Length: 486
Image 1: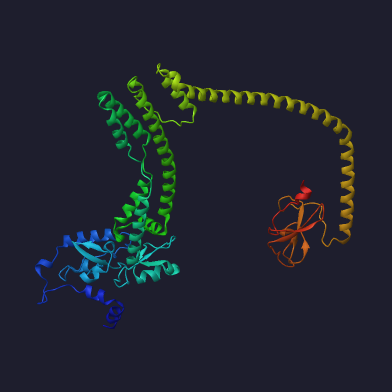
Image 2: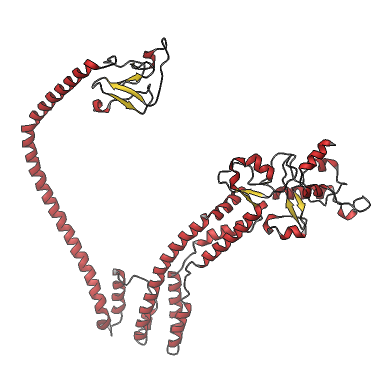
């Protein structure tokens, strides 16, 4: 009796009340409230799926709602734990709609399915990015057992749901600020209605062709569709029905990762569509002017519209071909574009000629320069090579000898002229700090007097120049003196 009293003293009152099976006033269960064994098993499986992020070992499978009465067989009742409790109407008003569990049409409150957690309410979610726990959702016991090292990153489920809703509203508002592709259909239709009285049949065909060209030119697949679908997918699920990846993505959404991606998409879309729309409007206005002037003469010439930059060579060529078909007004309209085309061609020719001339001049100059330099170099090399080599050798030998003689007088360590066979060949000798003596390696140092001390950084001296210097390597690592190695 003491153990039972201690157990129930740790359990929350709401949990203790939920453990009691509803019975009739007479103490016997009502026939309408009893469930068969197959129904119990089915509900257990459904509840286990809704808690797939929390399930662990066998024997911790959550049970169904409190509709299961004392008449259910003892093996099922003893081995299964309740993962939920029935919520009152007053409690439901204070809870977020995504933080409940629906069982048999009823709203249930999630409780921890783990052993020794006394069916505590699952009130918390971990927002730590590198959390190694089995589940980010848990009760107060779970926080101590699995999230104690990052307890500052814990958030209540109700707070999480409210923050997520606020961030989703901001996300939707930002989506609405992205520039959309304009609908040119009304503008084109209004223009062609003015001319339809004269050439109705032909204008209908032209109208169709123009609209297809503009829509094809302005065809655009919204880049934000994918990220919007992802946000809608995670926001449409209950918290306790989410996988660990979905919970992690929800946390990233709150932290602003999706907003950064949407901001980048917004900038790219606006920049691209602004240029595209300006080009379409400019070409469309130019097309209308030409159509109003020449419609009565050669309507067939306006059967298509081409979207090319008016400042480009391709646009000038298109205009030239267009006006060549119009024999009546070719001299009036084709001259400026012909001049532009000739100007482009002349510029290309001049650029090409300049490139060729510069290449020829550079080759000639380079060839002459090389020839002159080769002559000078050969003459100088013959005169100076031998003298320079002799002077350098004499000077280096004298300097090395004098420096070595000077160092030998006061050199504090034993001199080595050859490397030992215990290590990789190098031109330096390490100095052991344990005895302040130089040995080629640890084996040469020996272990009789004391073991060699290996430290970082370490001192060593060069066998050629006898320079002592500090290196950021262990004492037993072979290091070459770069100055003498050259």
